[in-house]
Structure formats: C-alpha cells, structure tokens
Image 1 (cartoon, one colour):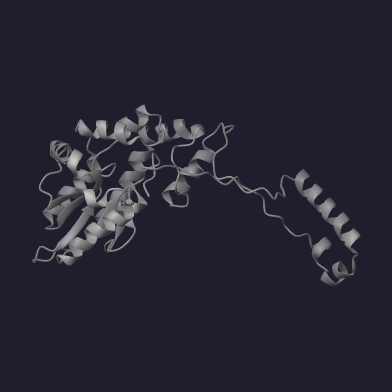
Image 2 (cartoon, rainbow, N blue to C red):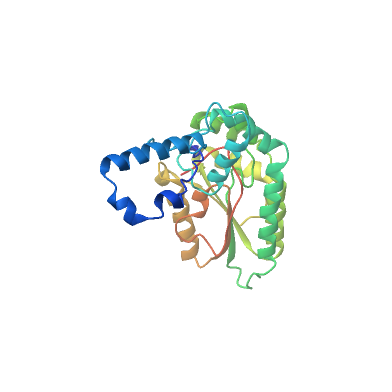
Amino acid sequence: KSRSTRLPRASLTRRSSPRLFGNPGRAALMGSSQALALWVVITHLLSLGGGFVSCAKPSFWPSSATHDDAGCLSWRVMVEANNARGWRTVPAPCVGYVKAYMTRGQYGRDLDSVMEQVSAYVDQIAAAADGLDAWIFDIDDTCLSNLLYYQAKRFGAYDPMAFKKWASQGACPGIPPVLGLFAALQDKGFKVFLLSGRDEETLGSCTSQNLESEGFSGYERLMMRTPEYRGQSSSLFKSAMRKQLVDEGYRIRGNLGDQWSDLQGENVGDRVFKIPNPMYFVP
C-alpha cells in the first residue's frame, strides 16, 4: 500500500484595480521603466494587504507549523477527492487529526452517509431471476478494518511484511454498516463477490476465516491476488478480475471500496461507492 500528498496553501487572487488597469490605452503608452515601477508598487501593496506573488511551486503538504485542523481537513478532502495521489504516509502534522477522525465519530458519520446513499440506490434496483446481478466488495477497510494496525504504526509508510503478519492473525474487526449492506444485498438476491489485493497463497485461508468470524458468509466468491498478478497495480488487477466476472455473464450492479483503485479501470459496474479512508493510498 502506498500513501499521501500535500495540500495547497491558499493564495489570494490578485484583483485588478479599475484605476490602475481600467484604461488599456493609457497603459500601452507607459514606458517600460514606468511599467516596472508600477509593478513594484502593486506587488508591495498586495503584500501589505495579505496577498502574495510568488514564483515558488505551491506545496500540497500541510506545514509542520500547522497547529489547527484546517490544513489537515483540506488535505483529507483532497485525499477523498483523489486529487492527492501517490502519497506514502499521513503527514506528520496530521497524525493526530487522522486518529481523531477515525476514532471520535466523524469517520462513522461519514461512513453512515455513504451507506445511506448505497441503500437509496439498492432500493431502486432489483436482482433478476437468472442470478447474474452482482455486487463487488473490497475487503481491507471496506469489510474488515485495519485501523488498529495503522494506528499502532502512527500511519507510517506501508510495510508489506508487518501487514502480512497482522492480517495473518485473522483478527481484523468487521465494519458493521458494511456487514448490514452485505446481508441486505444477499436478501435481495444479489451475488456478492469479495475482491482483495491480498496475496491468496499466503493470506487466503486466514482471510476467509476472518471474514467468516465477522459475519461475512455466504458470498459467491472470494477473489484474491494470485502469483501471475503479483507486482501489478491494484487498479489493473481488479479490472482483470471484474472482466472475468463480466465474461462469465455477471452484471456488476454496484462496487464498494475504500480506495479509488477499487473503483477505477474497466467494468467498474453501474454505480461505485467510495468509503472514506485517509490512512493510506493504494495505486
């Protein structure tokens, strides 16, 4: 798994003054030295007024001097909007913010809001009698939570061996609202497929046991990464797996995941739903 980017510092937009720029003919008559002098005066006035003119490349990372949640909130919005890509770790000033977001209620409220949207969509569709209407669920931080693992690591860069050790314990808690959706879809006759980038050879057995122990049972198929897909991006791997299902005749009516790579590529389905996750990024 990969991780975070940076947040743009807000820059004030320069507003033209009607007195200075309202007469283009007059500006054209000014000599270069006069124009330069005028520009110096304007930029000085802007700096006094709180704006700035800078040739420096804007930063998209919350400053270490950040003492409030404003910058970290903006960073999280960029993560969820998929504007912040390729980041490898939660920025240090935002570790406390992310921990609070995940554990003090806001994550749960945001997740419930997503589930409300999914439920509204599910109420509008029906599974055909041929049994080929399908939904796809990601596993990590969609069905099963890895919060305890990432919190213990202070949301540091992804460590494959450490994560494999954690996952092999089969102790990831289930995420209750997702389990409720899982059961509701089965009751309506949809086939639910669980699609994970976890390695099947090393984590297949413990993953299926973990899912079963947390109530995720009766799904149609658990699809995990096999040796031929090792090293391939999550987006490409999951696209290939979805194509297999479509080739088998399944109609993907919905797709649920915590990463944009769960929801992008080919054959993503009729509707995709993104669960919030500011803890890590998977390409």
